[in-house]
Image (cartoon, rainbow, N blue to C red; front, side, top):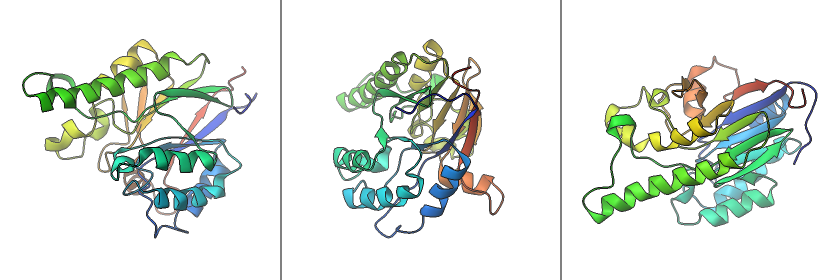
Length: 251
């Protein structure tokens, strides 16, 4: 746990790195720029492309460019593709990354809660647990991920708080994607815990063609930090990560 500071705290957030075994050397500049600009780095899932430990090892090596900064991450659906999420997680943990899956941690006096989340749709478009066993199993997965996320949020005890997800908790930040796939980009079930346990900001990825920013119904800012989206949103030459500054945690 990094100690609190008496100055503003800057977080650099990005997701959907999709690191492959051929990515060596391609992410160092990004992580180096993030380490220069911010006090800590937040990674919002799809860290690897096929969920392979060898891909995670390449990413861990690339992250050495930011090794002097705390790094906190959650996994994404791509990190589960090969059925080895625990191995991917362990490679990153061994490299000094705090990987959250329904847990919370504290960095520079700021509490951070994280979980992967899941899909299922938003508002009246949310899928209900009715009918075939496969549908009920799908919805139960969404409910269990929401419960893990709520458990992590409930552990936060600091005045300043952030939340990390891979899937979106609101429909606003997936706007721009084909409407037909909205149900697979996130779930309103992830927004409910944020209403009971408010935070300063929420970060997620997954929606590559979504919208950079939205708000929960209680006004909490939600940032879509999928790297492909950020790369299009920023001007050429500007680093593809979201920079957020919080007031001093010790103030």
